[in-house]
Image (cartoon, rainbow, N blue to C red; front, top):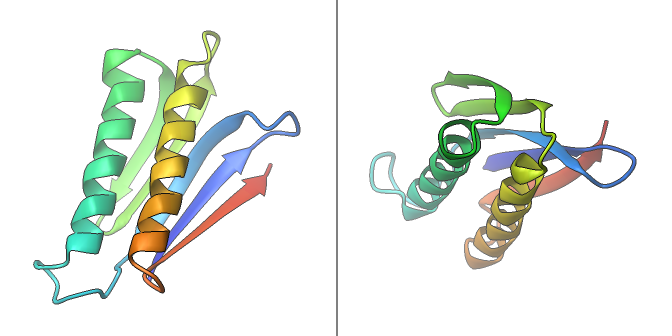
Length: 106
């Protein structure tokens, strides 16, 4: 199962995410649930760090990514994270039992 934890502050501003695991929807390398999550996460991380130049800490390992906004003065990071969170909820509905999404107050 893919675990997608999103972090927010007390004002509901999104601060980052930690996503790890494998969906086990199909064989490794042929799993469209994993591919969907991977593609969405890479686009979100690249949009935050490269397109909007938001200062963020990103740590990537096999089947594991952590992104934490260091500063987000313009709010672009929060908006991209909200888009990713919404997409992850949709994927979780599409691939039932393969993706667990949580929002955690930090």
